[in-house]
Amino acid sequence: FVLIVLKQLLKERKDLRLVLMSATLQLSVFQEFFPGCATVEIPGRTFPVHRLYLEEVVATLHKTPQFRPFLGPAFAAAGNEPDEKNFKRQVATQERDPDQVCGYGWALQQPMTRERLKDGCYKHDVLQQGKGTSFDIP
Image: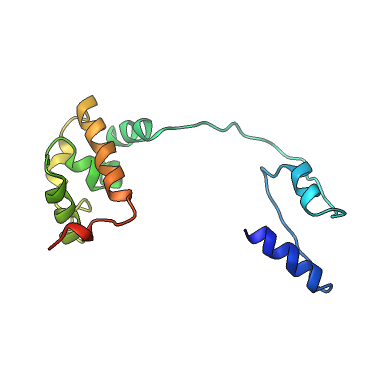
């Protein structure tokens, strides 16, 4: 969207100069969108990109106790709070709890079993939904 606006703006403002930098830009697509643009290629090292899925990140963070709070309340509560509304209510009302996971800090010491991981992913998705946690709070 921003590039569309910039392209229109460049047509209207001849004094405007645009510099875009990207390590992952597809040059041919960019040149088709901005015909006649100058390009500069700076050689450098490339680094491999590794895909990590949520389950892998959770398992990795859970291995190190000081990183466990970064998993958030969904993975802390996983396997311990079967009622979705109670979970949302606690997250909404205990957001500033000193344990950093809405009062579920006591559960961070439990092993991350396959069942807890599955439940944590579900609860994480619940928290990521557009309406958040407040719509279930009376």
